[in-house]
Image 1 (tube, rainbow, N blue to C red):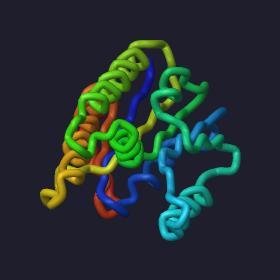
Image 2: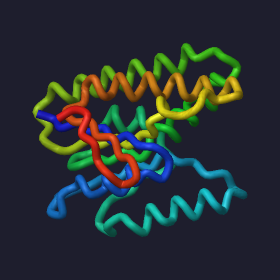
Image 3: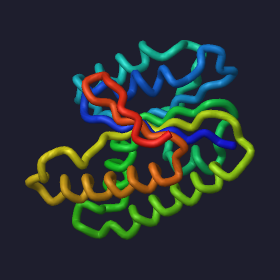
Image 4: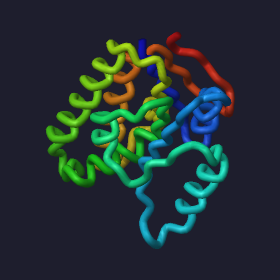
Length: 181
């Protein structure tokens, strides 16, 4: 039985470090799916990415700049950690031009991902599949339409993954609150 784990938290809450600690030290194979796509001139974001890279064990395989849908279609052997769904959702909104309000293509992508996770949950895979995602439901209402679109889609995605996940944790100020286990 697959073990799907969703780790939610606010910005700088410690959710990524918590998720990384879920991987057993003796894991035979670990694939870290990094969904961030930094802009060329964004040195601050590049530094954040570098800090994440330095924290990971050297034997972990990192997959950068790839569509999460492709990874889920042909899931690698071993434990898989996806960090994070917020940057993946932003990319999906970008490539599907959702910022103008047409979110049908993004919702279709969400449907496909959740259907794939339901299949994974039903198979005999015993490896961990961990998703890290920002919890967007505790923030202020974004002033701009694009912010509201992202918040709504990511909130929907988080809820749908939580429904198929075996375990869901919320990380606040580095502290874990188990929401589902």
